[in-house]
Amino acid sequence: MSKKSIHFECCGEQQEVAVIRLTRGAKRNALNDALILSLRDLFESLPGSVRAAVIHGEGDHFCAGLDLSELQERDAGQGMHHSRSWHKALEALQYGPVPVIAALHGAVVGGGLELASACHIRVADESTFYALPEGSRGIFVGGGGSVRIPRLIGVARMTDMMLTGRVYNAQDGERIGLAQYLVPTGTAFDKALELAKRIAQNAPLTNYALTHVLPRIADQPADQGFMTEAMMAAIAQSAPEAKQRVRDFLEGRAAKVQKA
Ligand code: 1HE
Image (cartoon, rainbow, N blue to C red):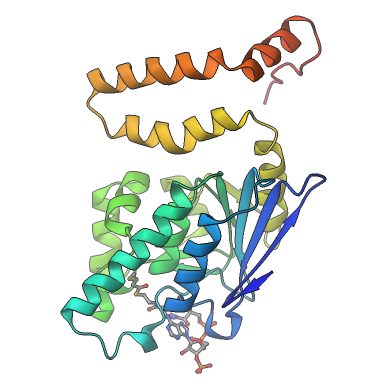
């Protein structure tokens, strides 16, 4: 399926992995309104077979952020609604039906980093670089970056990126927590797909707990977090699928954890 500015298809034996590609390569996958809307629509209507998703970008860069050509005509009220439209789309992704893995290469800048930070796992290849040029463009993040990025790298590092225009390369990006995986140039998509296929084998309820409940627990005071965790643990372990998976291990049918 091709929506405006994105291409979407399902792969895997059971069509369990959704692959989403940003297709504005000529504009370095800059995010215009149509693309943001398409992302929201897509994550609100993924086929029932899908258990995990990969998002990547066409051409030499993952994403150049907000399409700056659309910024020209907006007044303050329109700007507010525009930012909220990004929030809705990226919430549909972050709190959507399945874990999402971003395969990163080239520029991951501005709104591109905001998009990547809404994903659950980021796999970066060696060509990746990260920046928040909003500071030098006289604007601010508006796609949830001020909420999500400090949770990955801390307020101090994000402040530095925006005040000074600091660019992180792929190695340093992984070191500070912008990506969980660093792979050779040209292999981020393959690694992301491999991870997605593995994630798709998990019990859906466990994946739901990890994408919807864990981040909320992380935002709760410890006392409430412990209680939410206890409730989620009880719900997860009472599922028939969990009981079957534990039985499979105890009876020697499931894989052991291997030394890394
Ligand atoms: C764009 C955009 C864009 C490229 N909006 N058109 N983001 C930025 O400030 C980053 C701006 N972009 C760049 O710094 C560079 O384009 C890149 C480092 C990403 C890539 O460089 P390069 O040499 O491969 O490409 P290019 O020649 O700069 O760009 C190719 C074309 O894409 C060119 O248009 P053309 O008509 O001359 O071919 C560029 O104008 C166009 N292009 N990036 C519009 N971003 C919710 S708030 C989020 C706030 C933000 O994201 S602010 C950060 C915006």
